[in-house]
Length: 188
Image 1 (cartoon, rainbow, N blue to C red):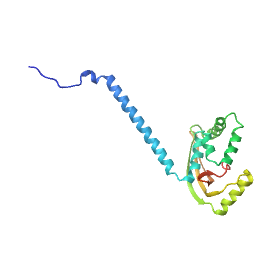
Image 2: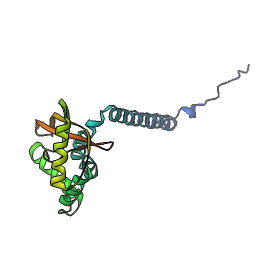
Image 3: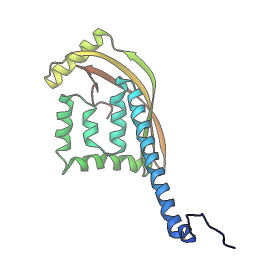
Image 4: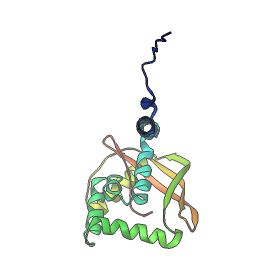
């Protein structure tokens, strides 16, 4: 009696090497999917953030990640130039950011994380916007028109491995042309 075997797989198809390759492939695909999902969530979160809040978001992310370029971009051009002049006193912009990070690490330990919560938002009146424009003209010799603005009262949470602290800060954010910026460096 002969039996016919219609199985196309053989015992060698189930070897540990084949199983290991399949497992690695699944892990790789899972890792890529997780990366894509996280990237999408970050972008959606950024897109859902109100435009006036983005300078605060950039400011905190820049300090947390020692990213000079991002820090500078939270400010209008007249302050960007001043920040670049301050950073030029160091060997590199990276050294400047490292000093900021080290200062925070001295107080809070490594792995600094900055988060914030907006407690209050007050729209800047036309008179207050004109007052800020006059101060900018006087101090920076720069004529600007502030289209809109807010005073934001935030809780800034600074956390490291050794310590944490929450501080209430007040920021003025202003809209110049179509972009939002931090109005000054006073809180910095």
